[in-house]
Image 1 (cartoon, rainbow, N blue to C red):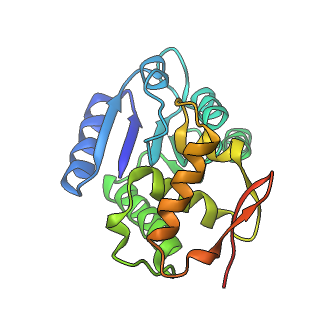
Image 2 (cartoon, rainbow, N blue to C red):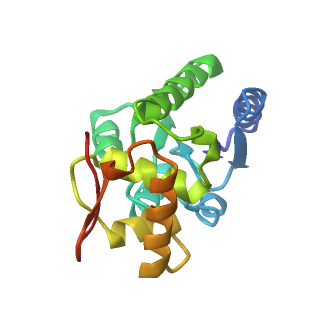
Length: 203
Protein backbone atom coordinates (compact mmCIF):
# COMPACT_ATOMS: atom_id res chain seq x y z
CA UNK A 1 0.00 0.00 0.00
CA UNK A 2 0.97 3.62 -0.43
CA UNK A 3 0.80 5.30 2.98
CA UNK A 4 1.13 8.96 3.94
CA UNK A 5 2.53 9.42 7.46
CA UNK A 6 2.29 12.68 9.39
CA UNK A 7 4.24 12.53 12.69
CA UNK A 8 6.43 15.34 14.03
CA UNK A 9 8.31 13.27 16.64
CA UNK A 10 11.32 12.32 14.55
CA UNK A 11 12.18 9.10 16.40
CA UNK A 12 8.59 7.79 16.12
CA UNK A 13 8.33 8.93 12.51
CA UNK A 14 11.51 7.02 11.69
CA UNK A 15 10.38 3.89 13.57
CA UNK A 16 6.99 3.82 11.84
CA UNK A 17 8.53 4.45 8.43
CA UNK A 18 11.06 1.66 8.89
CA UNK A 19 8.58 -0.99 9.97
CA UNK A 20 6.15 -0.08 7.16
CA UNK A 21 8.99 -0.17 4.65
CA UNK A 22 10.08 -3.59 5.92
CA UNK A 23 6.52 -4.81 5.38
CA UNK A 24 6.56 -3.70 1.76
CA UNK A 25 4.60 -0.47 1.99
CA UNK A 26 5.52 2.72 0.16
CA UNK A 27 5.68 5.53 2.73
CA UNK A 28 5.49 9.29 2.21
CA UNK A 29 6.71 10.70 5.52
CA UNK A 30 6.14 14.24 6.84
CA UNK A 31 6.57 16.16 10.09
CA UNK A 32 4.64 19.26 9.00
CA UNK A 33 0.90 19.43 8.29
CA UNK A 34 1.27 21.90 5.44
CA UNK A 35 3.76 19.66 3.65
CA UNK A 36 1.47 16.68 4.14
CA UNK A 37 -1.48 18.65 2.74
CA UNK A 38 0.57 19.51 -0.35
CA UNK A 39 1.01 15.79 -1.01
CA UNK A 40 -2.61 14.64 -0.79
CA UNK A 41 -3.38 12.62 -3.92
CA UNK A 42 -5.85 10.01 -5.12
CA UNK A 43 -3.09 7.39 -5.04
CA UNK A 44 -2.74 7.27 -1.24
CA UNK A 45 -4.27 4.07 0.16
CA UNK A 46 -4.02 5.05 3.84
CA UNK A 47 -3.23 8.18 5.87
CA UNK A 48 -1.65 8.02 9.35
CA UNK A 49 -2.04 11.39 11.07
CA UNK A 50 -0.73 12.77 14.34
CA UNK A 51 -2.91 15.60 15.62
CA UNK A 52 -0.43 18.01 17.22
CA UNK A 53 1.89 18.96 14.37
CA UNK A 54 3.14 22.29 12.94
CA UNK A 55 0.98 24.55 10.74
CA UNK A 56 -2.02 22.30 9.98
CA UNK A 57 -3.04 19.87 12.71
CA UNK A 58 -4.15 16.31 12.04
CA UNK A 59 -7.86 16.91 12.56
CA UNK A 60 -7.84 19.85 10.17
CA UNK A 61 -5.93 17.75 7.66
CA UNK A 62 -8.44 14.91 8.11
CA UNK A 63 -11.22 17.27 7.04
CA UNK A 64 -9.20 18.46 4.04
CA UNK A 65 -8.47 14.88 2.99
CA UNK A 66 -12.13 13.86 3.19
CA UNK A 67 -13.17 16.99 1.29
CA UNK A 68 -10.65 16.09 -1.41
CA UNK A 69 -11.74 12.45 -1.52
CA UNK A 70 -14.53 11.25 0.74
CA UNK A 71 -13.43 7.63 0.31
CA UNK A 72 -9.92 8.18 1.73
CA UNK A 73 -8.96 5.99 4.72
CA UNK A 74 -7.43 7.79 7.72
CA UNK A 75 -6.06 6.56 11.07
CA UNK A 76 -5.54 9.22 13.74
CA UNK A 77 -2.69 8.88 16.26
CA UNK A 78 -2.80 11.03 19.41
CA UNK A 79 -2.31 11.20 23.17
CA UNK A 80 -5.47 13.30 23.34
CA UNK A 81 -8.26 10.80 23.84
CA UNK A 82 -10.84 13.20 25.22
CA UNK A 83 -14.42 12.49 24.19
CA UNK A 84 -14.47 15.74 22.21
CA UNK A 85 -11.37 14.78 20.21
CA UNK A 86 -12.51 11.20 19.61
CA UNK A 87 -15.96 12.37 18.59
CA UNK A 88 -14.56 14.95 16.18
CA UNK A 89 -12.12 12.48 14.64
CA UNK A 90 -14.75 9.83 13.97
CA UNK A 91 -17.36 12.39 12.91
CA UNK A 92 -14.95 13.76 10.34
CA UNK A 93 -14.30 10.31 8.91
CA UNK A 94 -11.31 8.53 10.48
CA UNK A 95 -11.55 4.72 10.43
CA UNK A 96 -9.52 4.17 13.61
CA UNK A 97 -7.89 6.06 16.50
CA UNK A 98 -4.60 4.97 18.04
CA UNK A 99 -3.76 6.24 21.54
CA UNK A 100 -0.22 7.43 22.19
CA UNK A 101 2.10 6.11 23.42
CA UNK A 102 1.76 2.90 21.46
CA UNK A 103 3.98 0.05 20.36
CA UNK A 104 4.76 0.40 16.66
CA UNK A 105 3.78 -3.26 16.29
CA UNK A 106 0.24 -2.31 17.38
CA UNK A 107 0.05 0.10 14.46
CA UNK A 108 1.46 -2.61 12.22
CA UNK A 109 -1.35 -4.95 13.30
CA UNK A 110 -4.00 -2.32 12.55
CA UNK A 111 -2.55 -1.68 9.10
CA UNK A 112 -2.32 -5.41 8.41
CA UNK A 113 -5.96 -5.79 9.41
CA UNK A 114 -6.91 -2.92 7.13
CA UNK A 115 -5.07 -4.59 4.24
CA UNK A 116 -6.84 -7.90 4.95
CA UNK A 117 -10.24 -6.21 4.93
CA UNK A 118 -9.40 -4.53 1.62
CA UNK A 119 -8.38 -7.89 0.14
CA UNK A 120 -11.48 -9.61 1.52
CA UNK A 121 -13.53 -6.95 -0.22
CA UNK A 122 -12.49 -8.40 -3.58
CA UNK A 123 -12.00 -12.03 -2.57
CA UNK A 124 -15.44 -13.16 -3.76
CA UNK A 125 -14.96 -11.66 -7.21
CA UNK A 126 -13.65 -14.02 -9.89
CA UNK A 127 -11.21 -12.66 -12.43
CA UNK A 128 -10.27 -14.12 -15.79
CA UNK A 129 -6.62 -13.87 -14.77
CA UNK A 130 -5.95 -12.37 -11.32
CA UNK A 131 -6.49 -9.12 -9.49
CA UNK A 132 -2.89 -8.27 -10.33
CA UNK A 133 -3.93 -7.94 -13.97
CA UNK A 134 -5.96 -4.85 -13.10
CA UNK A 135 -4.53 -1.38 -13.66
CA UNK A 136 -4.59 1.15 -10.82
CA UNK A 137 -7.68 2.88 -12.20
CA UNK A 138 -9.46 -0.45 -12.71
CA UNK A 139 -8.71 -1.46 -9.11
CA UNK A 140 -9.96 1.86 -7.76
CA UNK A 141 -13.13 1.69 -9.84
CA UNK A 142 -13.81 -1.86 -8.67
CA UNK A 143 -13.16 -0.88 -5.04
CA UNK A 144 -15.56 2.05 -5.35
CA UNK A 145 -18.29 -0.08 -6.93
CA UNK A 146 -17.93 -2.95 -4.45
CA UNK A 147 -17.83 -0.60 -1.47
CA UNK A 148 -21.19 0.68 -2.69
CA UNK A 149 -22.59 -2.62 -3.92
CA UNK A 150 -26.24 -2.58 -4.98
CA UNK A 151 -26.17 1.22 -5.01
CA UNK A 152 -25.73 3.57 -7.95
CA UNK A 153 -22.28 5.15 -8.18
CA UNK A 154 -22.52 8.41 -10.09
CA UNK A 155 -20.12 9.64 -12.75
CA UNK A 156 -19.15 12.44 -10.37
CA UNK A 157 -18.18 9.92 -7.68
CA UNK A 158 -16.12 7.94 -10.19
CA UNK A 159 -14.33 11.08 -11.31
CA UNK A 160 -13.59 12.08 -7.71
CA UNK A 161 -12.35 8.67 -6.52
CA UNK A 162 -10.69 7.23 -9.60
CA UNK A 163 -9.45 10.25 -11.51
CA UNK A 164 -9.19 12.89 -8.73
CA UNK A 165 -7.01 15.69 -10.13
CA UNK A 166 -7.51 14.58 -13.76
CA UNK A 167 -10.69 15.56 -15.59
CA UNK A 168 -12.68 12.50 -16.65
CA UNK A 169 -14.63 12.37 -19.89
CA UNK A 170 -17.71 10.20 -20.37
CA UNK A 171 -15.87 8.21 -23.04
CA UNK A 172 -12.96 7.60 -20.65
CA UNK A 173 -15.35 6.28 -17.99
CA UNK A 174 -17.10 3.99 -20.47
CA UNK A 175 -13.76 2.69 -21.72
CA UNK A 176 -12.58 2.03 -18.16
CA UNK A 177 -15.77 0.13 -17.28
CA UNK A 178 -15.50 -1.89 -20.49
CA UNK A 179 -11.89 -2.89 -19.70
CA UNK A 180 -12.82 -3.84 -16.14
CA UNK A 181 -15.76 -5.95 -17.28
CA UNK A 182 -13.51 -7.79 -19.74
CA UNK A 183 -11.35 -8.97 -16.84
CA UNK A 184 -14.22 -10.32 -14.74
CA UNK A 185 -15.67 -13.83 -15.01
CA UNK A 186 -19.13 -12.31 -14.45
CA UNK A 187 -19.05 -8.99 -16.36
CA UNK A 188 -22.80 -8.56 -15.88
CA UNK A 189 -22.24 -7.81 -12.19
CA UNK A 190 -21.45 -4.23 -13.26
CA UNK A 191 -24.68 -2.69 -14.47
CA UNK A 192 -24.98 0.48 -16.50
CA UNK A 193 -27.59 2.83 -15.04
CA UNK A 194 -28.55 5.13 -17.93
CA UNK A 195 -27.93 8.84 -17.24
CA UNK A 196 -26.91 7.99 -13.64
CA UNK A 197 -23.74 5.92 -13.47
CA UNK A 198 -22.92 2.30 -12.66
CA UNK A 199 -23.82 -0.30 -10.03
CA UNK A 200 -22.10 -3.43 -8.78
CA UNK A 201 -24.76 -6.04 -8.13
CA UNK A 202 -24.39 -9.31 -6.22
CA UNK A 203 -25.25 -12.10 -8.63
